[in-house]
Image (cartoon, rainbow, N blue to C red; front, side, top):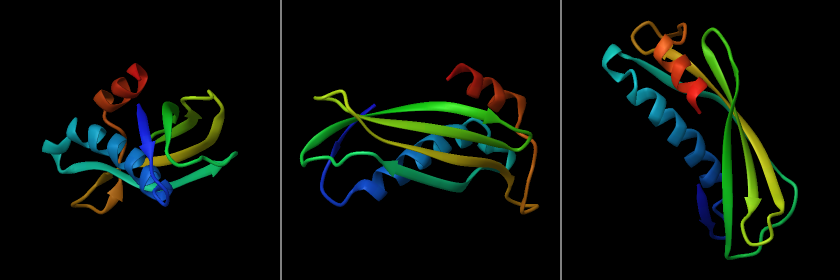
Length: 115
C-alpha cells in the first residue's frame, strides 16, 4: 500500500492502518456480535519525510495469541527506498455483549496465517 502523506497527517495514517486491518478482520466475523478492538498502537519515525512524499507501508502479522494479534508496520519512502519508520499495533478479539476478550476464531487465525 502506498500513501501520499500531507503535513500533519502522521497520526491519521497510524489510525488508518490499524482501523483498516481491524475492519477487514471484523468483517470476517461480524455476524457473531464479536470483533476486533485496538489495544495499543505506536509508530517510531527514524527519518523526516518531506512534503509531498509517497510512503509504502508494509504490514506483517506478528505473534498470534489466544485472544490477540500483534501487527508490525514498516514505512518506506518510495522515491528513495529509505526506511522512515516502523510501528506496531495489538488487536484483541472482543465479545461486545460480554464486554471481554474471547479466543480468536479459527477463521481469523487462518486469515492471519495467509497475510
